[in-house]
Image (cartoon, rainbow, N blue to C red; front, side):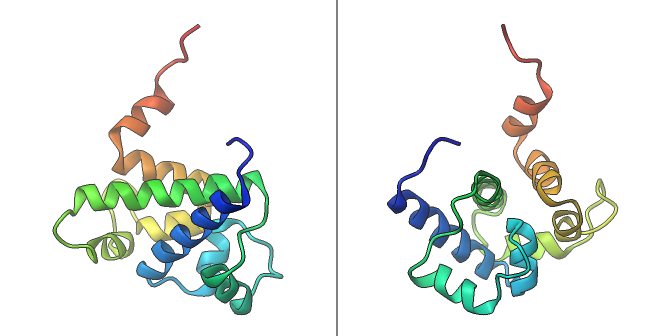
Length: 133
């Protein structure tokens, strides 16, 4: 990702927190998905919801971007029921052999990529096609 302005980082932070809250994740689950160190606790997440940005870290920004893209793909998959995304994450998936949420929590950024690839065929195509020279 390119250098983000403070305003862009604030938008990314708030949008990501809104999604994580809509998925009804515990603070520890949010921390794991975002790849944040153990020093970030509930109080930090309250600040993210109101006035602070995520750390200026490319890995955190990438993970937040994946979360936004997963949420967008879930909205496309379930356009008439906004609560289905959180439910889909918690139901055992036939291709994963477990819940998508467990995959996200156990495999970190790679889990985000796998779940996004499952939901978004264009993303899946992009990561599987050879790069053109």
